[in-house]
Amino acid sequence: MSPFASFSSLQRLIAAAALLAGVVAPAVAHADSPVLNKIRETGTITLGYRESALPFSFADDKGQPAGYAVDLCLRAAEAARVKAGLKDIKVRWLPLTPQNRIPAVVNGLVDLDCAPNTNTLERQKQVAFSVSHYVSTVRMLVRADSGIKSFEDLRGKTVVTSAGSTGDRHVRRLKADYGYRDVYAKDHGESFLLLETGRAQAFVMDDVLLAGLRAKSKDPSQFVIVGPALSVEQNALMMSKADPEWKRLVDQALAATFASPDAAALQKRWFQQPIGARGTNLALAPSTEVTLAWKHPSDAVTE
Image 1 (cartoon, helix red, strand yellow):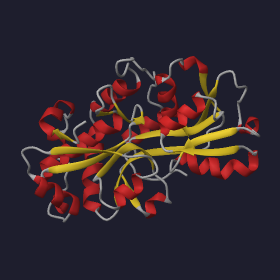
Image 2: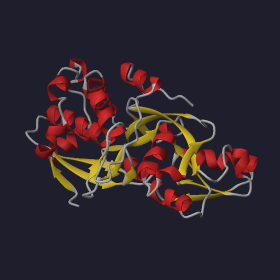
Image 3: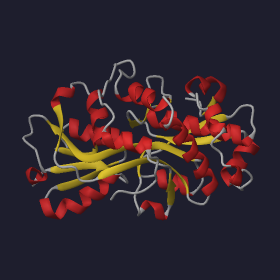
């Protein structure tokens, strides 16, 4: 896969240009932004994505970045093009994992991370988050015939999650209380493989991601999402905290999208219609929490 994509070929995905032009506040029109300065000088924006975080961010059947969060990042890229006064903009894609995403953002390897990153107070010490683009809950995926329904059923069993994810902190926090063994995979695809092959009996992660992995499996009926909601996750794009003007522009791009028919169209495309050659369909309508996040854009944390 070429790391570069001509933005002209991506503009069919972006209907927000005219809308975005009116949301940049005149008071900050000339404020300095290292990210925008770099984009203006190079004509390139670097976006991080996941290879197995369907439907938010994943590699499609052709190995190209795709998904709900990826589409939102393309709208932010278009806002950057307009703001920088560029005729075209190149998009360079960098695959990241839950474990290396924060270092990649902090070290400036990516300008924006396009994934279901959970906005937490702890992570805010290192990076900045956009307004929430989705809301999910952390639960666990198990085999339908496992008999596991709660954490009490995990004693003596093996629980997997992806290293560096929100599921990671819950698995570590609850280990002593429920007496299970914990293992940490490099990404969501590997975590699911451990569950699928019987090397783990439960996979703890955001419910939407679990639903996506289940839908992609050979036999989705073999897996069920169970257990209590361990936390409510405010999912957001992630970027450097050293550039508030870049965050402002990204937030404006998302707010413009959420205020337009694009929000419902993106939801339908990625959560309620078949995706890819296999026709994976999560069949998930937007929850009340998601609808409110679109109606009232905010980067507030709900921990």
